[in-house]
Image (cartoon, rainbow, N blue to C red):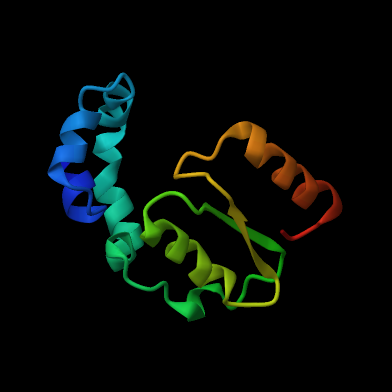
Length: 120
């Protein structure tokens, strides 16, 4: 997990060292065995390479793409790319939120999207 966080995600080793002391680290380590499969499916996109646009051309349902604006810039950039692919893709930026968007902030947006089809 530490290797993935530094090599694939690009986190500084010092930040990962701090994460290893957090209570959630054990849970992250428990999922580490799935990372090679994630890498096979995601390929270069795990290292901030652009998504292949043609992969999404057949998606015709409304798609809501969300990201906080207070986290790592590549997270928001990674959300902007798919949101710009088609008219049925919409971006919702969550002000003041990082990678883990609070449920009290996320729930109303998802509720609106799934009940009325409102796109951001």
